[in-house]
Length: 98
Image 1: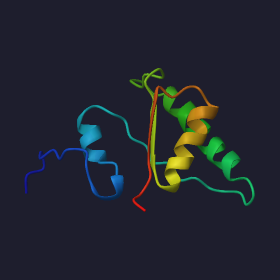
Image 2: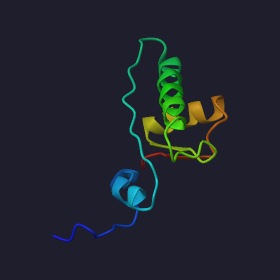
Image 3: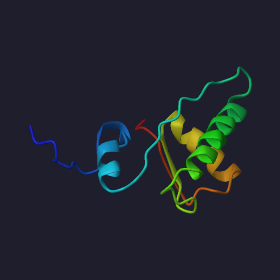
Image 4: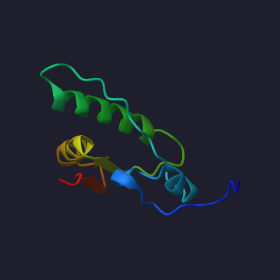
């Protein structure tokens, strides 16, 4: 097995190819969002805001170059904080095929 084999960022269901991004000097985090019943949007915002605030403090993290990505319901979870907080430089959201 070749451990240094880099696969292009493509996959089924628009899955994010984390090894590809990490091998190209990106920091990737996958948040575990805990939801409060009836407060879905607030739960997403609370989690994403906390994580991004933490990441900005890490050495080597450029706070002007933070992006967000999501697929399916995660696409909604991507758009909501992207348009609420203005600290993301890019956004990529996907929908599945119908």
